[in-house]
Image 1: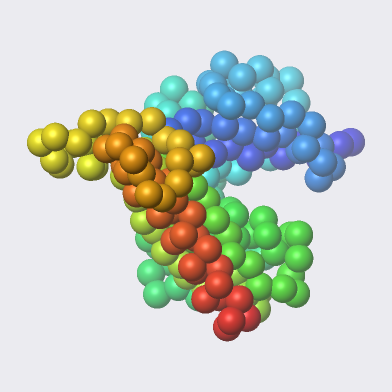
Image 2 (image 1 turned 180 degrees about the vertical axis):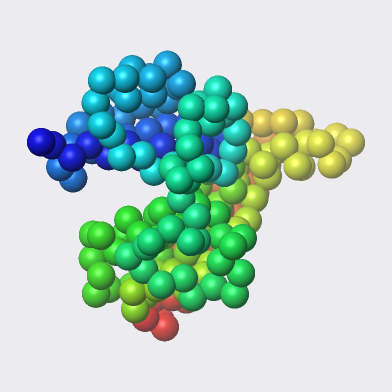
Length: 192
């Protein structure tokens, strides 16, 4: 009988999921709903693992406590982190995922969602990382915490120097995030 694993990510912005059969991805959903969950689990045995950083009340009502990924879950990696109980399950999941790909080499795991996270996975352990505001959060903060700056759309093609307020905001957010990421990659490449 095939082993079915359902990995669900209840994120800050959306809920998504992937179904794996004998270790191979067979389906992916974004958005993932309680109705899809009911359909998948109604007539077959499925192992479930949930990474939860956001809210999805309807789906959460169908899940059991044992379904959630935490720092206490039996993991294929060590958590070299001072406060593992505060470590987001999304960061734990990506760290475990890269070790499944390659245990020998160090990794910088980059997740650009609601927040930007960069995490170092090396020597079989989650070593820690950083959390900073994501793209939309940066745009919204500049708009909401100033009297005159407009809310603009992201555009990673706009380059320095911005020739209007809109372009300057786009460069300030999009290009700065790319430089932030590249700066950390450069620093970690020197150390690892």
